[in-house]
Length: 95
Image (cartoon, rainbow, N blue to C red; front, side, top):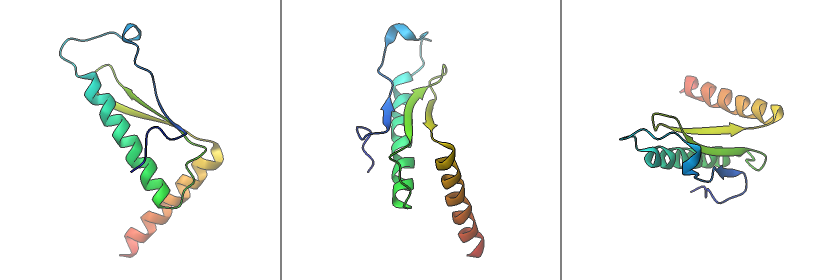
């Protein structure tokens, strides 16, 4: 499994003074979901042969506690990801 401690995967340090808290919203669960989802995406890209070394990942939560993964990549890497997704889509249509 992709290790969030690997280079390129960032998780914002938790700063309780940096957020507005809403009673009853489970922000930690959303952050964990985002961390897991980011790792799953990185693992899938790696297993497809994509070099994830130049990608930046951040696990976050929205105000409602929903997990969010922010992915920052170069234009060249975005083109590579798009080509990979298109290739997978073509394989799915051929089946």
